[in-house]
Image (cartoon, rainbow, N blue to C red; front, side, top):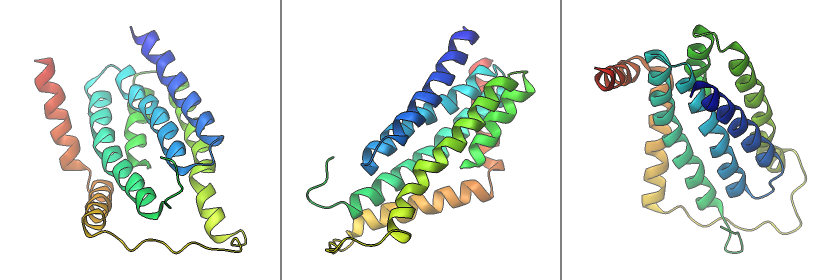
Length: 179
């Protein structure tokens, strides 16, 4: 079973990241990135111990807030014509290395490096390339969406700065499943 999860983790990370590289649409890029993140979560499960499962649960929580915030920003900035960090990864990859899955952890780190390219591409378009002749005016922020984005940003910040209590809760959750 571990070998199957290992292969699935590798494939999800690699296919998700490579597919995201090819996207021009931010929402599609985030969707393919989600596939890669599923692979990162599998790295924690491959390790087969409490620390790996704990890291996977922590990563899921952080990623949920991060992803909701990213999609919220994409929705906020979307135009009518539009179609439809890493601290958690450190815990995942550490659990894999601790349990002798160094190769999978290295592949995860390499895939994370690939993701830097497509995550920074919107920044390059916003700040480093000349603006198009006609720049659309963004819609004013919606109060509910703005509030949700603030909550997501605060949650990611708190989880990144003080992960211990959430990691302890995740560990207790995993241990309760095993007993």
